[in-house]
Length: 242
Ligand code: ADP
Ligand code: MG
Image 1 (cartoon, rainbow, N blue to C red):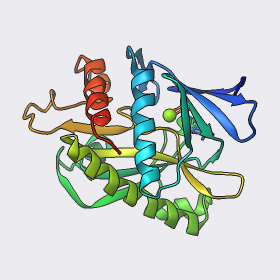
Image 2 (tube, rainbow, N blue to C red):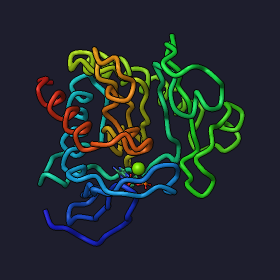
Image 3 (cartoon, rainbow, N blue to C red):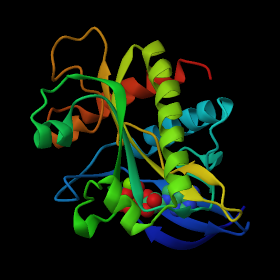
């Protein structure tokens, strides 16, 4: 497999073409951004950590029948994936209230959400990734109603699998963001990444609300030792076989 041209550089990853049709290489960067890239920084080792965590979790999903873009890990910072056309929706699942949900609704941080909430945001940095109502989702027609049903079902299945898995790691899955795409045949695959950049993860048995945070909130809120949080997730995730 040979590295082809650089197709896109995002906030956390760079996408390269390869000499194999329909296969792309994603390079995971140490760069970190928050609040729609208003806050920028770098987290040492993040690229390797997120690549390894994502790979492990994509394998877990495949073992549970959730189709993903994951193919292999050619190097510690590179993931070979199936090329998809990304559906420009961020699918967010919430088990516990945090982040923008608390800000926008007044719900207290840590409120349990049962059944889990599935939300669709428009993936558009220039527009600030706005939350979509069901009517706006239909209006924009970025996914057919059948596809929206599939995305919702997959998101809830992924939540069940991830929540159980993280529980075994003694980590609470607060919420997370998913991206999906269509392959050449129109099949919907889970794409992008599942990592402490895209999940809120709280260490169980840690009463201190700052110390328990193992995810990008350490960076967003300047809680310190961001790398340490990410590494704890990595160690615990890799310690659980899939
Ligand atoms: P962004 O700054 O847009 O969040 P990232 O740096 O996180 O970008 O990732 C790079 C881009 O790669 C994202 O736009 C993401 O949607 C896209 N992407 C992820 N997986 C795939 C895939 N399998 N095929 C095509 N594009 C993908
Ligand atoms: Mg991204």
